[in-house]
Structures are given as C-alpha cells and as structure tokens.
Length: 296
Image (cartoon, rainbow, N blue to C red):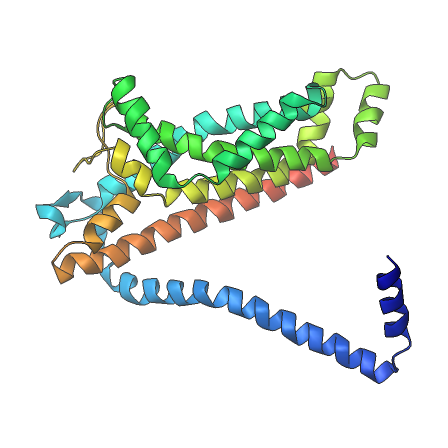
C-alpha cells in the first residue's frame, strides 16, 4: 500500500503534458493488443469464406453425402448437428441451472458449494477427447447404448454442464441481496423470489453462458468420433448412428481428393453460420425478454 501511494503521488506530480503522454501511450498499447487478439479470428474467417462460399449450392443442403463425399451434400450432417446440440442442451441446461440455483439460493455456505464449484472448474478444463473416451466407455459399452445420437448428445451434455453451471452461479451472485430482501419483505416465498425476481434479473447472463456452451459443443469433433458413429442419412431414432458437421469436416479434410477437401471449407462455413445465427437469435431473445422483465 505504501509503494502504491508513493507511486500515485509521484504520478500526480508529473507535468500535465507528460501525464497525457502516458495516457495516450497506454491507449495505443492496449488498442494494439486488442487488434492482435482479433487478427487470428478475421484471418480464419477470411480463409473459410474465400474457400468455402464458392462451394455453396442447393445440392449441399438438400442431399446427403454419397460416394465418400465425392457426390451429394451435407444434409445428414446438418440435421445430425442440430439434433445433437438440441438434445444435449435439453439435458444440460435444466440440470446446470437447477444445480446453480440450489448451491447459491438454498444450500448453506460450506462444503457443498465448494465441492460443486471445484468439480465444475475441473470439468471445464478437461480435454474434449477425455469426454469422448468416457462417453465411449460408459454410454457406448457399459450402458449398451452403442454408437448413436443419444450417446453423442449425452457426452456433449457433460461438456456443457460446467460452463452453464459456473456462469449461472456467478450471475446469481451478482444479483443484489437487497432485491431478494425486498421481494421477501413483500410476502413472496423463497421459490417465488428465485423464479420471478432473481432468475429474471440475471437472465441475460445465463443466456450468455448457454451460448458459450452451445458454441463449444457445436464444434467438437473428438467426443463424436468415439460415440456417434456415422450415418449417411438422417437418424430415425435416438439409438441410430448420426453424422455431424465437425466430424464431416474432419473426414473431408483428410480425404485424398481435392474436391472433397474443398467441401471441408464449405462445411466449416455452414457450421460457423449456424453458430452465428444461434448467437444472434439468442441475444435478440435475451434483449427482448430483458425489456419485458424491466417493464413488469
């Protein structure tokens, strides 16, 4: 503290023009760092757009893969990805939000909260291929589900849980205690306060966590290699094998044919577009619901 106060006093004694120079230098430095961070994103996007957009055609979306990728489209992979992410979200989101609400709103401060937080942090750092190995061992063999849509979706759900859980916990902690106390003082029950006040107040932050989780699992390849198998058509049952866009991209990229290699870029462009559309739609819904909540 003593060193910080001396540093501040010394900075305050600097001439005004020198302080302005330090301020401008810091602004330029931080702006340069921000640009360096975003450059890889734009480089990757430009590469995918330049090489992927020319391959777009109605056939790509209306037909399934055939002849090892030399013919047909990726309809089966698009449908499979949407089904995988949809089922994984239906499983992971209620469990994650429920666990977060219990640990923050109902559980006493102590070992339960610490255990849940520690477990979520550890799971968030586990490599995706480890989730794939677990899904292969537990869902495919131990439970006997086999290579299927259900095995892949449950594996992706496990990957979504820590992100949604921790984001929801932090957003609930950010809600002022006075807001809860005001609701309880008006006669509301604890559950009514949680459902109608606390969760509504942090809904945009929860949506952000859900989007991060969806964006992560939508592009995962390793877990799907171990759990979903491959299907040249759309699955008729959750116990059927299923194709996915990430797995298809990996298959196309390692194919010896340049024609199929070009399809890998087109498939990657489709995957990025789907994730972007989901993000835009969810943000729009979040803002609209936030406005409705504030009006009420």
